[in-house]
Length: 316
Image (cartoon, rainbow, N blue to C red; front, side, top):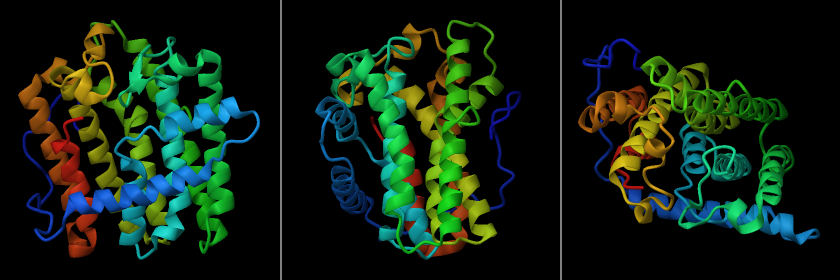
């Protein structure tokens, strides 16, 4: 983690030279995994009575997006020796939880946004009341989906995953990060330490849960879990740094949401503290550290290595 006093200038990690195997095709990998995830998500929540709430849940859940969290979960499970089938219910649950966080984050009481993934936000489409309930429904259903649909995984490992997801969502995770984020809006004295806390919890906690839950489902040993944790924390912070940069540099059309919202809301961001060039450099350093954690696994870690690079190269 970057410290409040000293942005990372040099690395204490002995090997930041890890590179993704040149024969790994991330474009094909993402396309194939997204297709699998989309099909599983589509089947996970049918429309029944009362139709409006199910339609509202599906409206945001099936609105597209990178599907980064479920894909990280699948990749980590495979790295630990598991299968896509073992991890897919948890992968879907992660996307349900992430979608809930987006629905609620867009509400007038939170970030008050009109667009998400290029479409009107849930409350603009269905009203605030249904949007809140759609988020609640997705969150609750995520845990049921893991518990009921996970197959060929020992019950104690499934229980660990359910507990990990709860920890990532609660005040120990994204809820806590959101609270500090709201309290910090308009403040002139937000430190780097506070900014790191916000995003390690609001964004990073669910990304870490994505990687670790996939590995746990496959019965990963403690060394792999530790390395996955460090990997995920680094990519989580890098993801948010790049998000902050894109809020300044990208268009609303490219982002699929309103650009410049952070400035409008008077939020502290990494570019506001460091500037854009230094923010990009810090993000890249975090990615190199993340990749170094998994380099010991060689070709087996290629998907996670490439996904780390994707964090800093993305344009939306």
